[in-house]
Length: 199
Ligand SMILES: [Fe+2]
Ligand SMILES: [Fe+2]
Image 1 (spheres, rainbow, N blue to C red):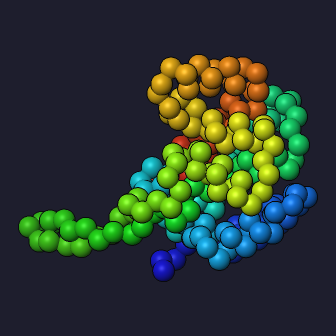
Image 2: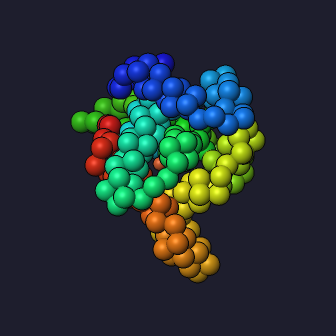
């Protein structure tokens, strides 16, 4: 296992203490699933776009939590703390058991050398797209409030779907539930401004 770039232990402790502050049936079962059946605490957040390093997904989830809270405060929009925690910390649970290390070869100055990249598994266990997959996994352990589901489902904003109905519903959702727009913004700020691309 490669070294984590972040203080993974501190991030894990923070994640657990936030999650355990949520008083909802199923939390401990979900945490046990995450601990024993997934690579959540060591997985990268992407193959090459942001936090593509060990511990990247955990760090990204905490960044989204921090940025979402800031965005809500700036706009004076209230949302229960436990919904902020559930939506932010679990929105990318679909990325668990999803990235694998792959060996590649490249020619440098006329000589072949091996290097490793992150790539996506060909063996996705829950055959649903990104946001729906997170929701499906969370729901196996934990009931979700509707606003949490909306934040997670639309967290990719316009990149979450191209068809007319998706775009139309996204607009309506963002207008009626501005939390969902701020959640998308928090995800963007985290990915593009707070996180790094690693070679
Ligand atoms: Fe995502
Ligand atoms: Fe994300």
